[in-house]
Amino acid sequence: MRSAVTVSSRLVGLVLLGVILVFTSAYSQDSDIPQRSDIEAKYKWSLEDIYPDTITWQADFEYVSANLPRLSEFEGKLGQSAETLYDCLNLRDELSKKIGSMYVYAFMKYHEDTRISAYQQLQQRIAGLDAQADEFLSFVEPEILSIPDDKLKGFIKDNSKLKVYEFQINDLIRSKAHILSPEEEAILALAGPVTRGPENIYDMTYLADVKFPTVKDENGEDVQLTRGRFSRIMESTDRDYRRRAHKAYNETYEPYFNTLGATLASSVNGDWFYAQARNYSSCLEYKLDANNIPAVVYDNLVNAVNDNLEPLHKWVSLRKKVLKLDEIYPYDLSVPLVPAASKDVTYDEAMATTIKALKPMGKSYVKDIKDGFKNGWIDVHETEGKYTGGYCWGTYTSHPYILLNWNNRIQNMFTLAHEMGHALHRDLSYRNQPYSMAYYTTFVAEVASNVNEALLMHYLIDNAKTDEEKLYLLTHYIEEILGTFYFQVMFSDFEKAIHEVVETGGALSAESMKEIYTEQYKKYWGPELASVDWGGWGGLRVSHFYTSYYVYQYATSYAAAQDISQRILEGDTQLRDKFIEFLASGGNDYPVEQLKNIGVDMTEQEVINAAINLFSDLVDQAEELLLKSN
Image 1 (spheres, rainbow, N blue to C red):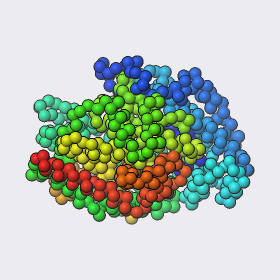
Image 2 (spheres, rainbow, N blue to C red; image 1 turned 45 degrees about the vertical axis):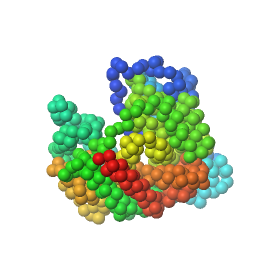
Image 3 (cartoon, one colour; image 1 turned 30 degrees about the vertical axis):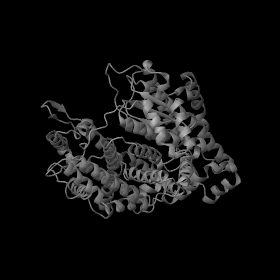
Image 4 (cartoon, rainbow, N blue to C red; image 1 turned 30 degrees about the horizontal axis):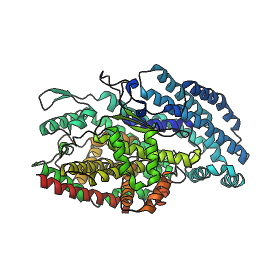
């Protein structure tokens, strides 16, 4: 997303929907699941705060449909005057806000119960209107780009109302070096269906063609492997079951090895094609430039971790020792070292605990959290037909909304704290920024949620009543850092390596990428991790690689959040107050600058090193308790 000035309503809708799809899956048909009518109102979100009914929704639909053609009146005229430019952008924002509200309402009503055809139709209608709006807005960005820089800056100076678009307009001016002539841009647009081909082929192969076999479980019963079941099986205490499942799962991909390799290689070649066409020196520079993120941010992340892998190697060695293994294999890396906390956590208990854990954030922040808990922000319980998982969504003109499916596990409490971090970030940004600067980037989106989760984790560890409870929490924290930080850095390292092969004139194959990934895996997990004959294919089946240079943001956000939460816990009230200001800043600056403003400089390695040091300290604490209990 280059700029809010050029973001059509359709793009906003699709970006938000993408967040939802990450966390959702098919609903359960279990007859024991309650109906929505069985749930108390206090445990349901209040979508009537967006629209009291579908009649009001329909009125907005008709208004937008009638007024979209007004946008065409501005085509070819944006350079005539500051007033004309402002009037066009203002009309676009007015219509986009309404489309955003209709989009969110329709999809969240559908998520309440996916069986209801009326809401299926509602979401289909708004998706169609959204696409129509995109067509009407397609002229805006090219036309703004055709206006001379001095003239655009003069418009802003002469018309104070345009100040709300100044940052985005200046960003467009910054990007002009990489915008081609209309004829060249048209050619690149024609290439789109071709360069999107690798992702489509991957989806068909990975999701449609790959069929998993059955394996024998701990009791000798046949179990049909699925991707979801695989991760759970890797937590089984039956090692031979884990080994059989790991072997079967990975060997399933063997017939598709060359296909997946050629597909990923084609995707990387496509990245290099666009980077060269737009006058970038590398794919990394091309991908990071959309949000003006310096390449040093990426390089610092990878280099800092590579320079200090000892804590990660120590964790693998500790696993080997605690599990009493002669050799440790990849299928031994997920089995829990301590049993899960057995105590159920009700939603009401989780709310109370979360409020206590977030006390270091100050009275105003905690008040906002309490208001969210009691004012219809959250849809709590699983009901028949409801989407599963958890997410945070909302509209510019409404409070945020959170979908949960509560099952009284401690993980639900972490999800609640995490999503409330997203909700406060969204709420504060929307309340304090004009629409044109309300939407923040992916680079900072996970910071607030991870700060909340870290504060909750530290509160629970500090208040653990037994060594067993503390050890469970420590290992949970460690595994979270492995998944959100270390694995994403390893993926980022691999991405850069395969792109550099192409950028320096080399060619990629399934075999060469397998070798690169295998070496990366060995490097990160250390010399004690034994290899298996069927390993090394993991790098060919990561869907995020088809949106290249994306996963590093999980690691940078996580590191920033750990740094911020640690300093807040140490009593740094100045940073805490700046952090809350950051949450209210939306997209009013480039994301690296937004973090710098609160004293978190992602162009330096200190923040990354702090995350590594935290991990090392957690491993040391876990080691002491694990060896004590064995």
